[in-house]
Image (cartoon, rainbow over the protein chains, first blue to last red):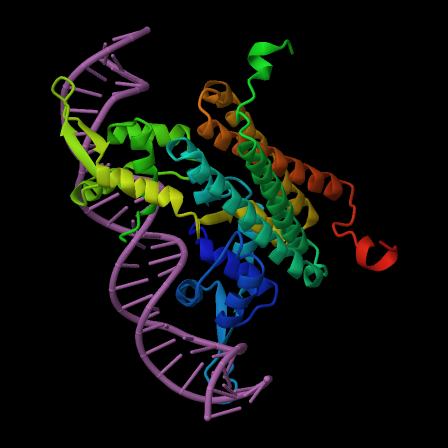
Length: 188
Length: 188
DNA sequence: TGGCTCATGTAAGCCGTTACATGATTTT
DNA sequence: AAAATCATGTAACGGCTTACATGAGCCA
């Protein structure tokens, strides 16, 4: 039934890991799953209200001084919904929107110098993302699975950077992009 | 100004590569950029009308028999817009939504057997995607840059499959997920 | 005759970002 | 005194998917 909305999934999970306020959820998500599963205030606060109405979380007013502040917690129903989602492993989303790759795809349409510029920019992008991930790697080394997810990100950035660096070298050298060896020229 | 909408980018590019009708655009996108840049009919047809109103494409009625049919072509302005986008290489989108990775991130929350089931499902997912890409690889071997983008997809699927296979083995063996060698126990 | 492909569109609804709006508390 | 952080929310808009609606032409 009523399967969890995308933002609900990360909210319930983060509440389980100890986040309490909407603000804290945002901060936690930003420094951890943001790379592959983000959430904005415009999603978080309305979603918390929806989850409350459906009885998946319970809210408690816990003001700090004179500023209003609401702490959330999973209900038993919320725990069950989280577990249900984590266990129902089929049809997991896997969406990519990669503009650099789209530009590469249309590489025949532009002068070689522009195609090369795109590849170079992409390689640099992955290098910077990698540097950022490596910075946060030390602190993240405490927990098991979240650290594992970070390792995935690091590995992915490394692999992508290397792939683009290779294409970059081939374009700079004016080498053919397609190697037609396997099917035509030589046996095996 | 008026920078191209996401769907406009792939439409203009595909028109440049020879697609003519909305239907053909959809088909072409589905077998090529879909993996990292998709588009549905609900986007394509309205977007074509918008592009026409803005003078980036021109439409010609070319019915087949008695069924209405519209062929589109880039205008000079459309060519310029496409070139402009392909050349302006900064701030390229790179969005990932990976539910398997999110489930992995919350792996501490579920029993080890469920975490393993998720990893296994993910490895299988990448294996299937890889098989699919390899099937279309032969026909795609003609063009330069589109083939290169396919190679990226294949490489990415291979890398991801291998990464998950490795985690799978470690979980099956009950091995620790984090290796704390570098910073603590041994020098270097 | 039934199913597939070609062909075009609309409508409802979800999801998400960005900007706006407000204000207290803490740190520099 | 100013800036950053903690804290909560709404409104407008953009983008996308899915379902619905229609129908011709072709092939087995």
